[in-house]
Length: 436
Image (cartoon, rainbow, N blue to C red; front, top):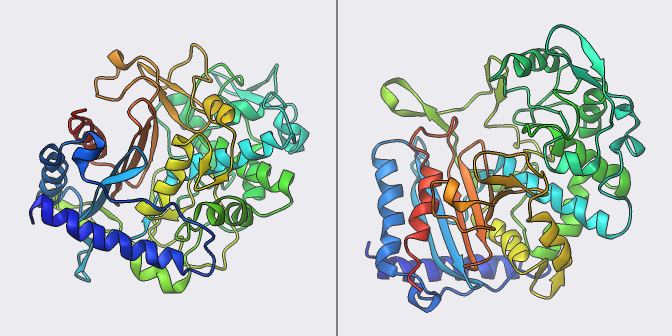
């Protein structure tokens, strides 16, 4: 298919999506994104073919089964395309409205919810979380040797937002200290939110409050279950379940009608299958829950809409187009289509360095829900300073570049992520298409 014909097909497809959103009974207003010629948005149609080449090549090598890619600039869609198969065995081609397990791309939404409550004056970010969740009073630290020591400080809400709380993930056991904590989490029945989990997010939060921390709060950066604790905080402060808060305060106002913790039965057929590398590097579909060491994940945990465990760090399913609504709201300074969720000053606070001299990796800091490019010369890629981004463990990625008014979204379903880092190469191929 030529790039020009593909643009025409995308126009028809996205118009169909927009009509569906317009007449959805639980949608208020969705952003009326227009399909624009890439050249009108300062991008090159010819150079965007590199995105095609990259993703088609990965499908041919069976790195992934399929993907959806989107590029938006100046508030309009320049490129949106689906590739390969959503389900190989069932011979279902990938469509632009396919649903994806977005895993950690849930975290910016929970962070948004927290900042909405912050704007309403419910708390200071420097407040100890124990003011709202008493189990986190008087925490203990996992010592370098055996045993624990009493912490000199308590975890603040800001430290939860920035992953400097000392709370880890069970599946991350890449150091001796983290492996010890992973075993403690495993013995306590801690869930990473990537598989079927009984109970509620309050149960997880209360358990974590009784377990040791990886380090003194604020002293290190370590990715973990902090945002799940914030999901419980949203419930405590708002008096609503996290799912109800998301639906009423975020998804309906933004027109995100396809974003859920648990899928309604009539949407299950749109959920893309999950794949892992098999023998000889050939991908195979994951159809059952997997337990490997401290890692647990499942392709089916969003199937039963009667469940009540709402993982604020990893639980959501969404579409590429839905997630664009969220990202455009952030890029617009907290507003979308006349509906404001945050003030521009709050978005500015969320998207600047909030971890001081600590680093996520060279040149990368962390804000309140996102990684932030601070020193672009150290990152080895094309992102501008001030770009903020994140991704999910099932091979999804987004980025927002305020300087270029540019958004990129890549959705696929593979675990673990491929060694060629396809989702990060996607980002670079988007940037090389900027010509103005």
